[in-house]
Image (tube, rainbow, N blue to C red; front, side):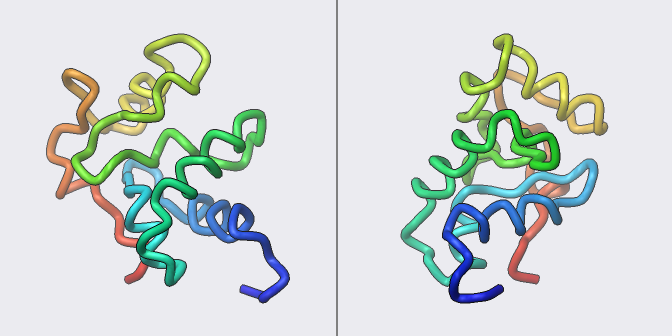
Length: 107
């Protein structure tokens, strides 16, 4: 990635790579960008991505698999529905078998 690319653009480049049926975390994205303390900024980027059709923001959850970004989606259950459409089970706003579905952007 070029130096001129903004942090948000770098986040979006990684998020576009998250495979169908997998999730990653804000912290894993920050770590992959060499800014391990910037998980909150990744969250801000995800919040700013609404309306961008090519950004699968629903695949980004917190480090425990919780759907902490769900309130930024239209309708209270949209994030969960999008994940379930990809075969990811969610219960009580948490991804079931999080480790199984986790995708590490650093690898």
